[in-house]
Image (cartoon, rainbow, N blue to C red; front, side):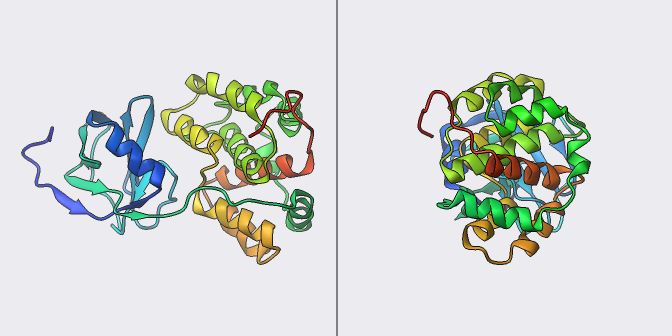
Length: 262
């Protein structure tokens, strides 16, 4: 362990099967790239892995814990992954309990679009930060929407949040998106390490619990108002951005020219 003078506390964690596999597949040293009382992230290869406190948003790349807050640690502090466990800030955290992060299937996209349209709020907080031409391209599944990558401020720029919402919803509905997914992958260097990881997860159909709950509500037609409200409460603009992406994916079912499968 890099910080041999630090007493290590083993903390149970929850995460996705994909995250558990990643921790076992990529042992080695790492360093903290972002740290706060509610979440911290370390760089592992070309992605990041996080530890989240009890009330933090549980992104697919993070291990959720029941800690009320995380120990103080500086960016650049050493970390290590060993035997599927992340050692950082005096903690040893692994994926002990599996939780679902994959988007549920929506078999009736038109019905889901109608349900979302009936409760869709004003999303100007997300729209006003992004070029209308890029949002039009995204609605069409056009690779030109890659210009949204990295647009906006923060660890997860709103352009990335919109793309994530679109990609997860496309996965959920079975909408072809290979060309756009590849175009986004090529542009990941233009955004933060955390946001690049979240976009990669979104391209694989993984999402935060609040977005997953929205898709479940749209698929079943139950409690859509509450699901929208919970998603909008995520971050300053993150929830609104993801909701906008979902709306664009559901309301403009334009076939992919390649006709390629998901």
